[in-house]
Image (cartoon, rainbow, N blue to C red; front, side, top):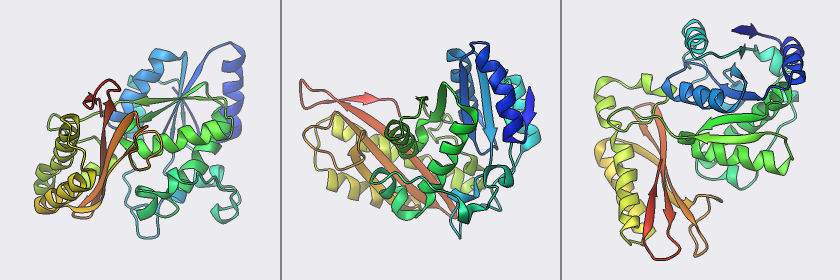
Length: 294
């Protein structure tokens, strides 16, 4: 596995790969890799010839009071994992390689509507930071396919819309959420949880599943379901940010034309912010839904 810290060197190497006719897969990460990230790598390897992974803790997507300085940086361990998975190239740039003129002077990419709700409401500017860095990485790597986890469903939706709106020649592939045996979605921030919080954390996914099952059985008072879910999370010790039942395509409220529902939640447990989601495909033949992976 070759490691590049500068985009010019990476682009030169990938030019040779592209000229050889190989399909390039790209997995952008912020490091501290876990099995969820490695699932993305494995999916990428199964669909493309050449896999590039980036590790870059992007300061533009962190708010003023968020965990940029504390975010886990585990480069040596990450390299070992990627090498074991057969990744051909790691791109690990510094901030100066991505933002050579500083972040204040950086042209930003904003995806309206999708990026302004849910996590976008509680973390102003976060998704602008995500879309800006991802668009830059796409231009640097120029992949045929890029892989993102479905745990960050809003982020995945925003990336797909950005790619479509800006006519970027890259196919976006979502990969199922990797969960621990008790249902907790793997996240680099799970390591912040103490033992008591870790025991409580699966309640978030359990609450999402209970809501999904109620809708699948025909219960359609979504406001009541959302309120009940928030109360359940509060009682378990969470501080809910949002619990929302939305159209999976638009992330707007569900309408008669909705084909798939996304149930999304964000909540703090202590100082750790956890997010998760499940989805429900609606059966057009009846009022019953069909459970989807989430």
